[in-house]
Figure 1 (cartoon, each protein chain N blue to C red):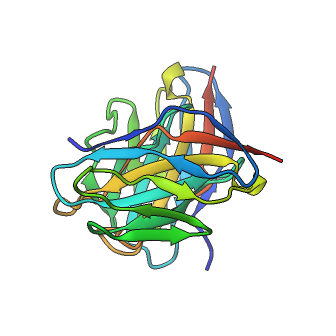
Figure 2: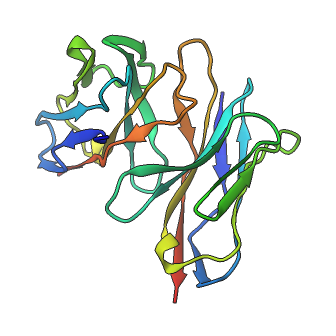
Amino acid sequence: GNSVTQMEGPVTLSEEAFLTINCTYTATGYPSLFWYVQYPGEGLQLLLKATKADDKGSNKGFEATYRKETTSFHLEKGSVQVSDSAVYFCALSDFTGANSKLTFGKGITLSVRP
Amino acid sequence: EAGVAQSPRYKIIEKRQSVAFWCNPISGHATLYWYQQILGQGPKLLIQFQNNGVVDDSQLPKDRFSAERLKGVDSTLKIQPAKLEDSAVYLCASSLGLQGVEGYTFGSGTRLTVV
């Protein structure tokens, strides 16, 4: 079955530090890949997505590249801000027939200190 | 555009009681999902609707959970009777198309505590 593995957290960084959050996946087909973010007290929000190999998703300074050869979709940001403190979830959707559910990783908490 | 609306935001019940959650998806979104998010874990799909038909309910504990989507718009998720392990955030999401490539929009969730 499909699965998503995220690096263990939590992660604490100083403002303006470089961020990498690792994500690898297992899927039987050709999934679309997503990063979702959950700010404190809020619902899940789509951060970025990629639908095929070598696609790069980007938003708000975050980037992730769909790497089929390594089955990875690592999230990066060159300079984090305090406002980036949140929980980040990697997810995939493998469109098998009518089923389009998202399979999520466990999530990782990012804290950015001033 | 208005987002996915869920109510209530919080609910505390005793074990063996029943509870119901309500979701109103984005207007025009044909596909609706209910996810369960246990603390420290990623959300897990409970049920997926396409209009008012069930597409996937393989992870729904049918002995105690039920869901319906009358008229293909609003949806309710019910738990009866509740167990301690049902304590979680219940998230509703919707997408425009069946396959959700364009992304899903999530509601803020209902936080359920079973004591």
